[in-house]
Image 1 (cartoon, rainbow, N blue to C red):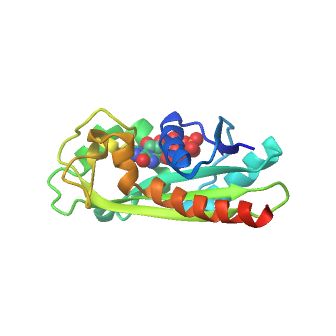
Image 2: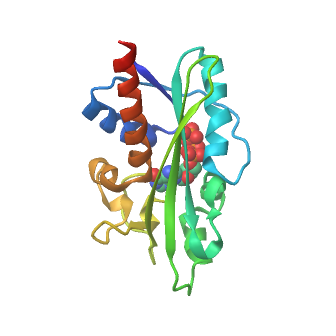
Image 3: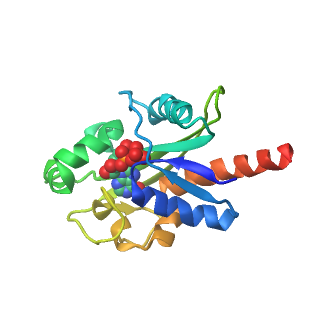
Amino acid sequence: MALIFATGNRHKFEEVSELAARHGIELEHRDTSYIEIQADELEQVVRPGVQQACALLRQPCFAEDAGLFIEILRGFPGPYSNFVFRTLGNRGLLKLMTGENDRRAEFRSAVGYCEPGERPEVYTGKVEGTIALEAKGTQGFGFDPIFVPSEGDGRTFAEMSTSEKNRFSHRARAIEAFFRWYKQRQKVRG
Ligand code: ITT
């Protein structure tokens, strides 16, 4: 049976599909809109979100909540990344960072899996990096053009292919942890 990924973001689905294929997991996309609550931690956002998606679908599914946390801005935009991307965008964030030498930031991801009537299971991942001086690259989505991962070669996420981004990304790390647990459980259940 295919594993359902509840997300409205097709880029996320594309990234996760590649990881799923490596694990031999068949993925199904459902654009289930669920209400995202306001909270400081992504785990607190994804837990009720995936529970809601699961209740709507009446099937096991997973969801993911991600955000960009900028050190000098005390973690902004963090859990408000979606709204900030739609309003300020990359240009607005770069403007906020003008003249700033401390450009450290990290992407975080929280993946929640839920089965009907059960409490969600949550896995997290993160990647450290810096906010670039200017936007570069056309691949990926969201803040990818302004984020340079520390473990990379100086390119932004938007200058990388999906499989390159998956080598370091917050999402790939959280998803890998989740898939390992999920496969183990499937094995135990037979
Ligand atoms: P869902 O339907 O899965 O919730 P979303 O686009 O609303 O999709 P999130 O709330 O998890 O996703 O993410 C908030 C925003 O953070 C997202 O819209 C992007 O602008 C940004 N973001 C998250 N992950 C990113 C990534 O890997 N690269 C660049 N930007 C990212």
